[in-house]
Image (cartoon, rainbow, N blue to C red):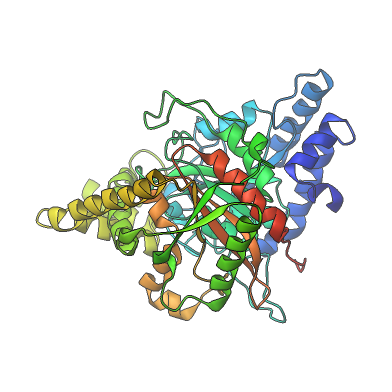
Length: 493
């Protein structure tokens, strides 16, 4: 059955269409793989076998009657941030204990409308706050990759660590994820998978648990660029229930693959060469530049001068929005409730028991920067910096740059319970150094695996594009993928 789980979405789609396999067979293969591996990898926090089998059976019936959708019979994993009707949706937090929504998020509804099959809900950092998937109430996810000659367990990145690990370990054909400051691209880079954060507004945020509303965006994590393109086509839509979603035609992203990049201008920002960056990352970047040059792209040096302010500005804006969004979790209507002597005491006890350390830290930072006397000094300044970051990109694109190539992460995957990072939250936040600018500017960004480091661990490159020009990113990422090849972990689980 492992042959079935090794099929990409595109390959599975062809076999289902030609009736070489059935959706039920494919789903059973994935359920078997999850049964065998999930106790070790901890990618799923809830598996929905009955629902998966019923959806697969319905898919087979639609295929037989010639009414197959774009994702008919394709088994997917869903990040625990997306509301799934009648199924565990808790943002991997204790405070949402027992919550099963009576509604479906727009993104997942779009996938089901196209015939996809739900395997279950995937682990993540609590409320999407984290870069390692260690803040989850359900314990850390284990990266399917290991360094050569080492048995050390590694993080899969965060917050979409469950999504990335499940895709890399072939526990789903593809997965939904979200990205607020790098939560799709960083885990994709750590696991040798492809992750795209679309332009802000390309996918509806309705029914997705909010972290920072002006930064959050849903996107796919997949095994290769083609699969990511197929998934994004189904996930994206305008939505009357989300006024930030944009009413623009959704292109056939898959059709962009294989198109020439000859004559395209690729910008290389000097600000992304940071102190202490490992030699492996610099080498990889040069390799990516060479791949695109060989394909006929023109490489130009650019400057994004406000990049150095992006991380501090992001860690003001995101916690500020989080402190507002998370105020609704109070033990009154749903989720955890810890009784107190009066309602204020109940609020305090519920929130103290329900939120994890990292979430509390960010709520406190956010509440502080929004408080009287500090709002102007911090939040307002951060928003001004955000405007300058956006302007840097606009000037680069205005000067004729089609896409920007940078590293995706400052290192390969690090160990679980890394003492230096556990003791210093700021060191953990630095994992987002190459990704946060994209969210601050609302731009699309894709992480594509481009090589292995000296330890044999995957490393990713990031391509940043103009608003709503995801096609350009898929086209360019495909060139890198074709040159670098695909990367799969050696099975040990």
